[in-house]
Image (tube, rainbow, N blue to C red; front, side, top):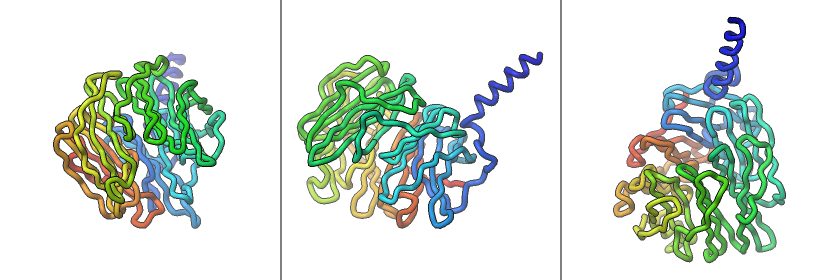
Length: 363
């Protein structure tokens, strides 16, 4: 009986890591402004934000298991709010493992936020920018771009989930004057890397270990933004260089593949207002583009696979739209603004695939 009681206590402590407060604080700190959000399901999510303290900004991490009706305080990472307005991105993978990055510095937790460790990016030399982190099959993947002397490279990094070190994946790199990349998980792993709007490479994997190179999702002269596999189909957004056909705009089209690794087709034009900030799909027919231009945030949405579009405008902040994602059941989230920007920031949530959005409240 004693051994059973001890085992029960250990199991309950393990399950409580992200689901319970990591500190004694339970209230949302005064002046809290969200910086990033990451959701592991329609109702379970985390928001990293900052609040004013001692003439600076102090980080705070909140969690919810009831779609934002109630919030609890968790152990926040020691990540300062950058002076250069870099996006501080939180990515939670289950209730224990999470990463946070400001593009240069990376930290991870394996115990639900109780402790955070710095992450080493093997071989990376500044200046560089880590643009995306995702997890599948117990492994973490990241896209890192380096700059310098008019020449740069974009590479894929990887490591075990929660590992304090990420290393380059051999064979996954492009070089050029302008390089970029994206990755998506869900139903498999997709990786797209490109350079100078001419060299485009694309790989797929079902297990994060064995990869298959295949034809890129987008035609030449455009860049691919990837969404996960939805109902066995794959959706990609193909975009021209920013500022085309006019300043503050981007030419875009939506393309589909019938399965992971399949050939992409279709050329349904999307609205061109704004510069791309994010893209994701709730289903093969329902996709959303986040863009910013002229001090306005745009959420361009299609419910019929790209044939028709509607646009939700968020004009109050117009500084940045980040962390657009659909964790399931038609539920999606996006962060509008930044904590120290004029007008602050907010998290918006949709429960109908992106047709309408409501601001989440903290408190």
